[in-house]
Amino acid sequence: MRCNYCEWRCKMPASVCHMYEERDGTITEIYPNQWTTYYLTHAEGIPLFHGWPNHQFLQIGAFNCNASCAYCINSRVAIEPGRKTFCFQLEPDRVVKIAQKANCMGIHFSVNEVTVNLPSALAVAREAKRKGLVVGCSSNGYFTQEAADMMLEYFDFFNISLKSLSDDYYREHVGLKSVTPVMRNIEYLASRTHLEVTTTVVQTVNDHEITAIAEYLAGIDPQMPWHIFRLLPEYKMKDRIPPDIKEISDKVKVCRKILPNTYFSNYIGTHLINTLCPSCGQVLIERICAQSCGAFLSAYNMKDNLCPNCGTEVKMTGSFCDPSLTDGREGKVC
Ligand code: SF4
Ligand code: SF4
Figure 1 (tube, helix red, strand yellow):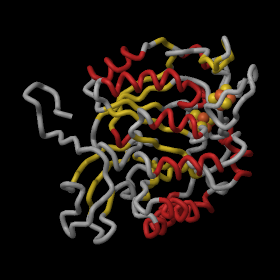
Figure 2 (cartoon, helix red, strand yellow; figure 1 turned 90 degrees about the horizontal axis):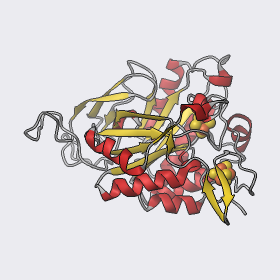
Figure 3 (cartoon, protein in one colour; figure 1 turned 135 degrees about the horizontal axis):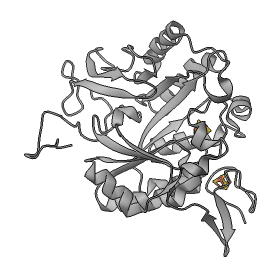
């Protein structure tokens, strides 16, 4: 019997991610409702720059992964031995109650790859939708078409990691066989849901691909939000040099002419995480880079997703959470 959640399509009892087994003729999660991490962030910290701006989300993740990136920033829970010891049990309704109590707009699955604990994630998503919350995930995008359809039933957004356009890169540095399923899923999701894409830049390894990736994404959606994440050497790549800020910034500026919603994450002080009007260049959304993928929204200058200067419409899903509005209690409306 095969597991069809991701493109490994493992034949049981072999399981690349060690998260599923065959039980009574069905593919079953070995560790249902087991999580390693949950914390609060804003949409900008996901990163989600064109969806539900300034709203708070509960981020939750489990452990293990179907990939083995040499630069994994979450290797302690995704790859390294002993990661199961970080686990705690939370049933779906409990996760949703925590999100509601924390005044969250929604729930975001991240930290590890959502595909390896998909039944638990879907159970949370189902309950969250029932309670009116928004749901989404960050993923390496190596899931099958069948899994994509299961997620699309409940998920409102995806941030897919496109690590390179090269199969060789995926084999050598990501531990996956090919980029083809990832590209197929990006193309499939782009017309069906809110999609943002993230690319981790590894100096001297994939930085030469930046422009080609911008062109590829622009061919799918000229307004696709794309986050170029500056890798600070991690895990097995600790001996690598960090990406050159000036070099990557120059490339991001070139990419913005191809794909206007290109951003440069993980560089404190950069203005390249602001959203500009693609027509007149007016600053529409200002953000402050915190650290890693983290960012805060500091000014929101759009109304009805239109540039106030020239009226150009800008891609945006969901409403802006305005912190100056209150609902009469102590908290914010959003
Ligand atoms: S989710 Fe895990 S068990 Fe299923 S195909 Fe992928 S790696 Fe194999
Ligand atoms: S896909 Fe993400 S969680 Fe999995 S190994 Fe790569 S960086 Fe780590």
